[in-house]
Amino acid sequence: MTHVLLPVLDAFADLRTLVIGEAMLDAYLDGHSERLCREAPVPVVDVDARRDVPGGGANTAVNAAALEARVTFLSVVGGDDEADRLARSLAALGVPAHGLVRAGGRRTLVKQRVLAGGQILLRLDAGSRDDLDPVTEARLCERLRAAWSDVDAVIVSDYGYGLLTGGVIDELAALQAAHPRVLVADAKDLRRLARARPTAVKPNYCEAARLLGLANGHGDGRVEQIAAHEAEFLQITGARIAAVTLDCAGALVFETGQPAYRTYARPSSDANATGAGDTFVGALALALAAGAPTHACADLASSAASLVVARDGTTACSAAELRVHLASQDKLLGHDDLALLADCLHRAGKRLVFTNGCFDILHRGHITCLSRAKALGDVLIVGLNADASVRRLKGAARPINCAADRAQVLAALSCVDHIVEFADDTPTRLIELARPDVYVKGGDYSLDKLPEAPLVSRLGGEVCFMPYLDDVSTTGILARIGERGPG
Picture (cartoon, rainbow, N blue to C red):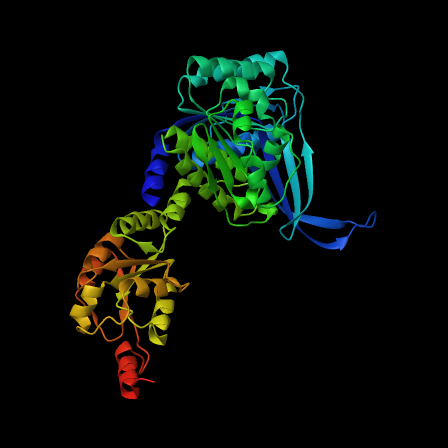
């Protein structure tokens, strides 16, 4: 899957993307609390700092920009200080703020969270939620028409706060009918957007269940519940593709004429789920616009969302971190995978450590050396001699364990990030592909006796020698087994 997804991610940089939806300001008041209020049994929070980040549809735009797409964001804000704060936050994150329509009669949407010791104590919501007035609606539609001809993908982020009026949706439908684009909709009520004939829709489970008139289920039962209504759901939403996100249960993806597809996610605290849907829909839309198969689009979107839920607050997934994440999924790598991974790691500024060996019978000396090697950088890659290579180096009676078994044992070590098998007597080719920052060898070598040392130095790396533990070696273990005999 790495070979499929990384080229798709690389294609994002050429995509022009339009995001239209409610712009919100997510404000975080970070502080500490050491006492209760005299007036009521509530904590007093001493505020230490304030963070302003784009939320709602603005966060979707930020995520598309972080994935290196060229983004135009259209929304309506008030003529207030919060609008200024939001505009500055957008610009700082690579999204031009000139698509924000200022409406003096409206208040900018704000979600203000009060935290003490990293724990959210209170959320205060404010801002206009009534439908746009006719003049503001006309201004937004004018900008929508002007932007449409120059984009590859359109993302609609509708939180139901009055931006996507009937007139705006009519404009979307007319533009899509006349000049079709990859159109992905994320809305509280997708039924309203069906006439725009979206390419894909992305409801969460609760939104999907409500649209289908179903009672909320629990756990994996939700998957079977929604899956039983695939045709109905696509018909209601007017979409060719539907990706129903199920938080910790992953996502269920429907596509007309194709079997349903399921992605899986690692469980995460709901407190960290803020904006994960924005990340998912942004990555999904870009992947569809890049022409990837639907299942690959869903996998890539799920991977991006998984990185966001691992962090606190409203945040975005960058192309660089997603590239590293995708390239790092498998412990056992081929040579092409190694080259891709090394390139991603170096571009992300990670420190790459490389070592190699036969690792025929894994013992305490091996584990100590590998643990120390891992501590020298961010990622440890182990080159593993193939069986024929071990025989040439150690004799016809070796290896005791085949390469597949040796690799599986190495993969079980938490200090080992990746393993690459090589058939040559030296790991020269792997070093050329990996370009390690650190090359680790055992203490019985020295720089003048290590043939790979000049290559490592020429590639900008350093060589580090690890001292061997006394009387711990595979040869010694085999000798003791031979002395004791069977039984």
